[in-house]
Image (cartoon, rainbow, N blue to C red; front, side, top):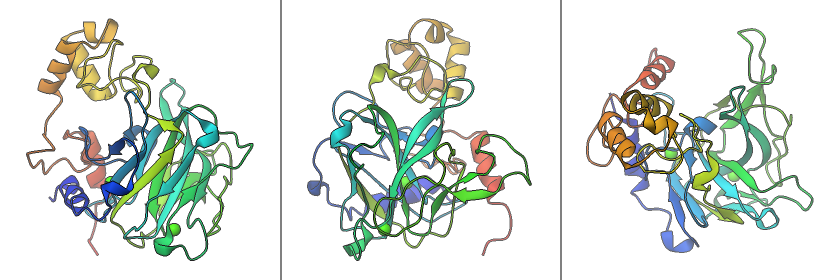
Length: 313
Ligand SMILES: [Ca+2]
Ligand SMILES: [Ca+2]
């Protein structure tokens, strides 16, 4: 089996997007325990910390199983009136940008992406098909956490006709979450739709960089201190609230040391996490069973394998 995230890292290292063209601190999808930003809220790259964030970078790839056709970043909109998102040119593929709100599931965990705006090509015949979202005056953008996704032309976000939360086979007709004009701002086809899947064939992939204005890192204190809440602190760094952002790792550590889930995720909890949660070191070692590149070999990888089951074409 080919380790998907190795391919992604190799593509990113080509350096086709110059760092010098970007302003402000940067969030890189490869610099975490999960070296690939996923395509939905629970697997997105969460830009947590202190201070501003001016850009995000990463790489899209085609590859084993479902490939790496979409990357999503969670950022904090600090100044809504100044908020913009721009794909930096030149890009090696024709990009699309998508902006989503973050919505909670019934247990209160941030889980769902709801549509806000999207853009394919900012203006007709833009070189490389660059993408840009500038919320219009009077938009409903407010201070808080939003999800930004980048995908190549050909790949689109879909919800289901049941609202995307329930429903079995036969009850859910997929629909595109945004209007589909090639230039100008695309708007939601249903304000309450929840992102369920990305469909389509990518018309190119490669490295990219996105610049932001009006944004900051997501405050470290934003999380309620619950296992698996993406706004909880990192499992591998001490923080004052209990619990951490990776649910499986959090439960493993708290089974060993309940203090980590009842009082604070201190340095000892982070050290235990390093011992029991890091099955693979994405920096140095190959981990061929880690199909979804989250640094662990678990049920998520089995699911990824089953999705890709069948004859290769
Ligand atoms: Ca990626
Ligand atoms: Ca485009």
